[in-house]
Length: 323
Ligand code: HEC
Image 1 (cartoon, protein in one colour):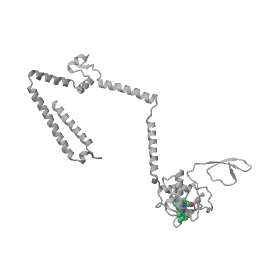
Image 2 (cartoon, rainbow, N blue to C red; image 1 turned 180 degrees about the vertical axis):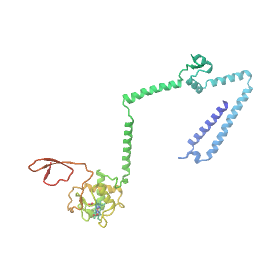
Image 3 (cartoon, helix red, strand yellow; image 1 turned 90 degrees about the horizontal axis):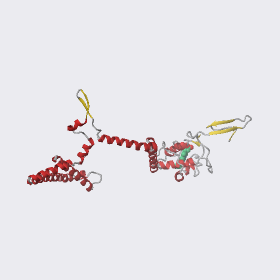
Image 4 (cartoon, rainbow, N blue to C red; image 1 turned 120 degrees about the vertical axis):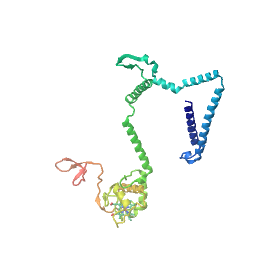
């Protein structure tokens, strides 16, 4: 018993010394013991000292003990015994088990007897009973929190986590605008982005497309007709990769950042429907955005039948007026 206590004290002492050194010796991100191997030597010294102290104190004790007269020795032993009795951990452990000692089992044996097999009427061990009470308290708290006051359940927790993650992604996108490529580009409508696009346009594009997008060497950018396809993805692709070979529209991806190409493409699309001073004739094909929401157009046919028809998402031609 005494030696176990000594071992424990030495181990505790070493652990203490180790952490003290780690906390006091500045070593950045690595362990001090890795950065400065001399610490091993220090710990070794501490170890030797710890053992020495244990040995000396034990020796001193036994010398003193032998020097005592019998009465005092008995007193000392009794005190030691008392100290053991008062060990808090041991006593608590025993209390939690509440086991009847073997000698007292007769007190709790029940009076039935099956071929020599008898039953003891043990009380429930307190550790078990306390745990049982704890579950009852837990159940009450749980019920009040989640069923009476409607605390958040897993679904809601999940929703909150997803919303937080979305916000983080948005935040990240703001700082990483140049991650855009033709697959992820989206039309920008913010005033700042359009203004930035305008600046890029005026610096690089007006020589061929005119300042109002009406077209010159390059085609008119304000009409519904596109040679290389309309919509943000096609326009971004044209700006990034250039037009058909030999036509004069170069690839801008080496000169402009992805964010700038997205801005200038959005600016180009914002010119749609404006009337330039000297517009070039439409070139290419009529562009109908495949992703546009289906619009319901109600038309009234002006003739004697006076039938009202609904035409869904079709170019309207002929003698009709929109209502
Ligand atoms: C050197 C003249 C020139 C410059 C500068 C120029 N373009 Fe072009 N652009 C053209 C020509 C020519 C075409 C037609 C390409 C083709 O027919 O393949 C074109 C086509 C385009 C188209 C596709 C039009 C369609 O109908 O499909 C877009 C969009 C466009 N340019 C945007 C820009 C932007 C934005 C800039 C500035 C960053 C720019 N261009 C600079 C000459 C130019």
